[in-house]
Length: 198
Image (tube, one colour):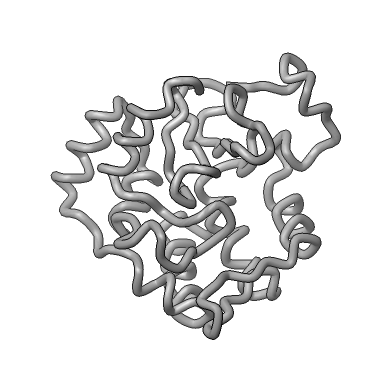
């Protein structure tokens, strides 16, 4: 049986093999007591979210090499700063992956049918007040990232220090692994009342 912890171990190896620059930009994990304290301050407890921060505690340099589309794992301090700054999206959505603010993946902490999904907040594509569900879960986000590297939808270019992305390949992979998220369905982004789900 594949567990979230085993997926994180696979992600660890995948980043070291395909994108060492992003891997070296990640901070070591925090002690469990610190993780628990921060999660409590955010008003959530989630075993997979805790496991993610037991793996790494965010990016050392948020302007550094990115590990995935929309950025990389941000620190608890950055999460809290982002929440304080962005008051226009649902308070149950917790910033988790960011490229320094323009685009983020937000963790849905609201109990219910959509708990644990990740939502795309994007200034360029105007998913601001109503972010759209993008990954079905933390596990599907990690799995999508692993497969994207292995199938060369993500390729780190050492010369330019940039994560190149093959959009068509990535979308095919993400759609395959996130069958319960709105972004990968046919919907009208302007009619948010029909698809917005928190």
